[in-house]
Image (cartoon, rainbow, N blue to C red; front, side, top):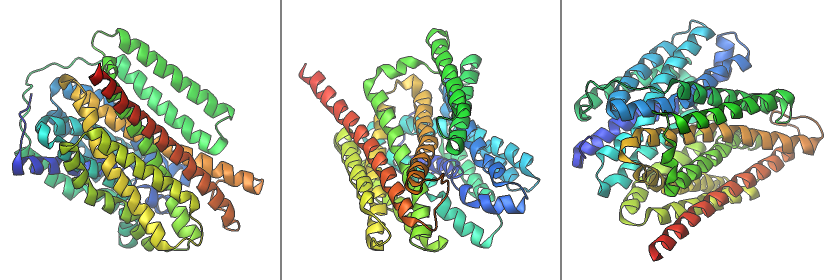
Length: 475
């Protein structure tokens, strides 16, 4: 086991970890804004260009548990370091325009590296940060995670104004080299030497197939509808692989994912609430460009500046939430964050074409504020309630909940939005209805109401967790 760090060395180590966490998360969202440019310059259809996003998310989500398991066996820092090199190499390759096939290969390489770093970053943080600083360390890493998830469209738009699409990948290279060098000096050497890993191949393959097929089913459902035959069959096949995975893991001698980790109710509930919150995050991510650019007529640059209010507020208040999480009951801080997020989400129900932009800005900043007070203590709760020998698996599950939340949120918000607009106009709608903005507003309101309900469910689960703990103390 690695020894805890403190003082300047701890925060420099966390910066090295955070930089790669930021870049690997950023690359899941930054490509979206470049898809039209890439489609045109590479002379490929838009639906083929979107696979550059899909393959990245599929590979990461499918491999997180594997690399989390390897981190527990071989050393989390060792797997993290290898991942930083692989990701940086993939970023170099991704910026070289040699056609779609080569780009997809490069994105695969990037995703393998990103999965190695994502699955072990929280485990490293938990190991290196002493208990009295763990909340602050978690808030620091959580800020990098959320910045990467949210900042992608804004940063991508700024780069594309002056540079080719290659630079949305090449921007990672100098930052990656700096982080690799910093990590070599600041992160302790792995204490696990000469260990031969035992890999549960059937578990790894069945979990990967579940994630990949489920993602494919969601993608098809966005176009054909969730009740169409192809997505229904695809999702059923994914569920079958998930059932096979669980049955195998329960009886495997050396399982990929030791399911006994879910015996901790505090760990399980914290993980589910993290998933629900990330689902709702992507309601804002998807709806805001439509709202700001199409409905309100703002330029891409101005819209990006408004969108930046969210990550900036989250970054500013993450330090405060981390300090409170170390000094107060983390569950109460989490409840406060969920309350803010729910209030802000339901407030969007009243936004329309004439809402003052000051109010819009305050709502976006409010989401960042609420996220800061939810994510840091919740991450600390997840990792602190995992066994020390399963921190890699716990961290990978935390990252998997985030990625599945991203996929589910994007699918759910577009499905709700398009369904409401189609019902309003009496015809199938899968894009912004320029001649009928009132239909978009109606769809936006329903979508935000759905997101608000999900946050209420997360609040109830967290409150139940607090009540359950109080009852155990009284007993």
